[in-house]
Length: 155
Image 1: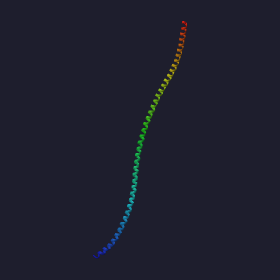
Image 2: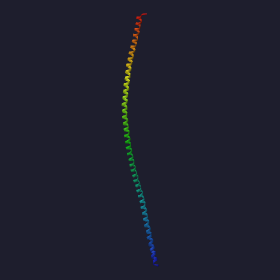
Image 3: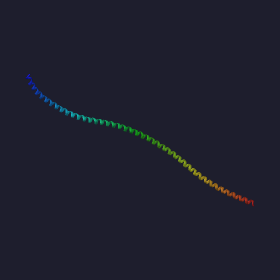
């Protein structure tokens, strides 16, 4: 068993040196894995940022599409309202033209009626004046006839 011990001691020395090499190798591997981990985390952050940017871009394009649809709907609504207002305006102008024509007709009839009243008033004034003159003349003639009658009867 003695021979085994030196062998074990030699193995222990060799084992210790192997263990040191193994520890160094494991430390280097740990260092490389840590570096790779840091690189992967950085890559994940970049990918996350890119994904976030892609998500934001996707959300933005979705919002743009919704706004485009709203704008289109508003344009259609505005066009419909414009057509409705134009139709009402056209109807109002037609009604205004009809009312203007009726107003012109009433104005013409009123003017004709006033002209006729003025004409009739002038004729009435002329006839009235003529009758007054005839009445005055007849009154004077009657008065003269009464005087003549009284003079011919004598006192």
